[in-house]
Length: 422
Image 1 (cartoon, rainbow, N blue to C red):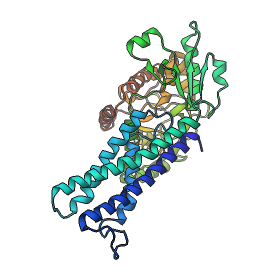
Image 2: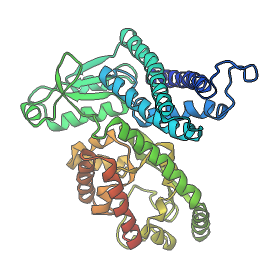
Image 3: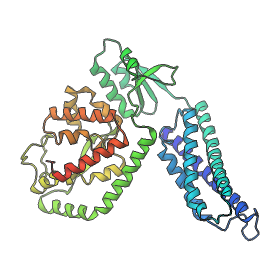
Image 4: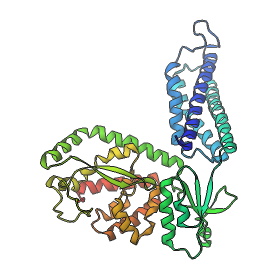
């Protein structure tokens, strides 16, 4: 288990235990307020109302809300002010949520008690969850060494090992080519490290440089996301929920298409193909097979109009993009997102990089089922079109937001209905 994962689990366990304590204390408080007694022989410290279900549900809901707030995304080097604010607003949301779910059924004696109960729940939730978080963060800052390394050449980039460094600062000689820079970034992405550059004057003037906690040095962070941590977590949660719903609701269609593909041409109905995904790491994408078996025996080829390799059923599937339905499993697994640049094969990526060496910049986000590139360019049958699609995907990446994702999904639905696939 990586240090990153261990730290995440430490925070999660602390939050679960804190939430359990909060609920126990708040239940005792409600017992005192509602019944006027704290200790009853018949109850043995256990209130007679709404106790057991929330004892399990409350901590789980708290962790879900904390996840959606983005708190667990970056377990190291937490900003003190941001940690305080995230815990504060999460406590506000949790308190209001459970206040109206649970306490709303209590007998109304006077509304002052309602407000007091809400205040008590908030104070307990914020205080008891923030203290262990504060302690864990402080301990990690004192005991953990956040390893940063500056590199000046491709040779140095080739020597970094996964888990040995958390952040890399690229400081190349002034006469270095742009291709050298992207080659280094390509080498570093699979290591899942923070990648930063020493900025030029232009970067500083345009606001691209950000002050980070490394001696106050302004840096351009390549791996920085345009989305906030909370948005990234909400995006991932939406991927899980929607992909699961699609697979369940469309399960009869999955079965029908599987049988149709299997019965009309030789070969497996589900086709696995290696693509390059997040951090430049390969994964296997799933599709309903649309080509005849061994159609790419010699070398990978881009699809063309009236491609003889495509079966009659495959042409129909591609027209309405039904061949991509199995990729909902890739989305559920975390290989892909619903919205993101289409993942390519390494064979074609090498050709794209000859014309657009900045392709590797896409590795900082999950590939997806759809994005601006597929909508604007559609299926690509030449490298030039792939480069054109790449530029749209770079534009998407630089303007990522949940609102933009929704807009792209609606556009994609229109493309599917019009049958513009091929």
